[in-house]
Image 1: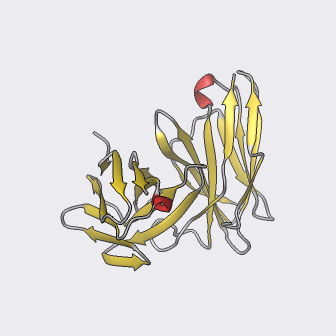
Image 2: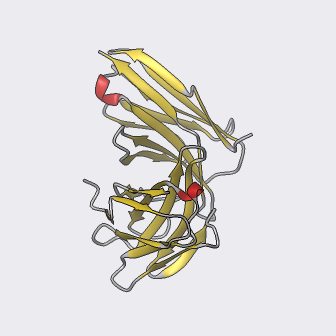
Length: 108
Length: 116
């Protein structure tokens, strides 16, 4: 069992739908990161959070430390949101543990 | 554009060979991180350097080594290459050494390595 699990692995949505991607972790972490990897391969860091909730445009990330769970929400999804979304936990030793990613496809 | 540059973009080589991947961090960033992304194992953290010193080590093989130079650019050396080393290699940078806790990382475009 991976220390960081994501669900679903694949997700197809229609443009405009509200999307939720989940991340659960079984190890102690200092922070939880959400990354976006575009079809071309480039990676962008979306959020880093250790508690509560963060919002950037149509993206919202939440974390529940007690339940060891984080969610990434996309409101009013758009085809340009199509990408692989990866969550990663970091510990005090600065080591990163990555989830296996969620491949999102948003159809026009 | 993240401001992190990596060269080369693509590299094709043969088993048993040695290659060097180069990364220049964003201006002002002191930390460089190296990651490997293969089809079967996803993203894996390899190693972190902060201001020239090794800060953290992940799943880096003994055949691999890295260093960070006084001008803060970093090189990842891969030797005795095997077919399984074929992957995308990313570097990332952050301002200080606390990316895991307090800082955002900025990723380079990656180097795609193919070992034949």
